Length: 86
Image 1 (spheres, rainbow, N blue to C red):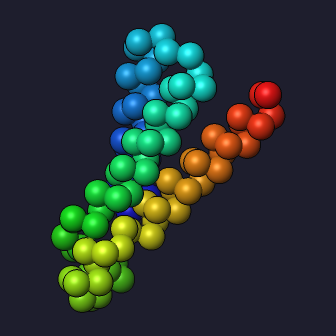
Image 2 (cartoon, rainbow, N blue to C red; image 1 turned 30 degrees about the horizontal axis):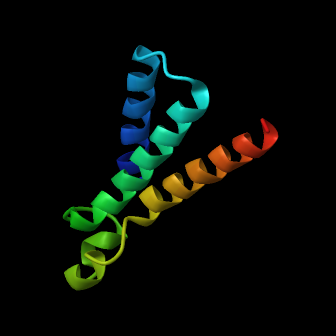
């Protein structure tokens, strides 16, 4: 689900906050965490939703669409922020 990308991103931002990291590096790390979380869904067993009946061979090659969408959105937001702050 989208949470597979958003939870690692959230944890990354919390850690960056505790370390008093600057905003841009904190956002970059959060995006990487989201992208890694989305990719990790390739190895997860589907228990519900449409992925529950998709052949396992297909699932092992494809990240969860919701998680991938969340990671793509976060990457786009980061890139927009970088453009607006330069």
